[in-house]
Image 1 (cartoon, rainbow, N blue to C red):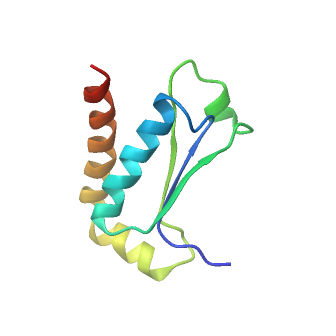
Image 2: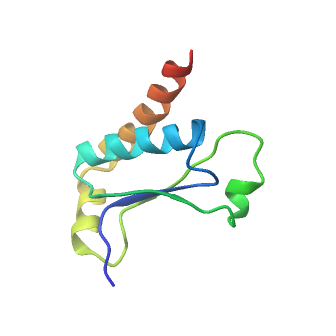
Length: 94
């Protein structure tokens, strides 16, 4: 099975981590990545051992040339999209 795009993993889809992941994914989709959604993964230590909202963002799947090319050609925009998704979540909570 070959997937393309981005996926964000969270401990719990509801609450601040879910909103954070949705905001990040939406901005990465604007860069040109296919949005594979937000998925709960409570079994991942990097997500279930934190005391704050956390998101594991998977940007591009290494087995697709299109994703590799997009990441290479639009790396700065990809990084900016992640930052903007974080800021949008923080600003909406203020």
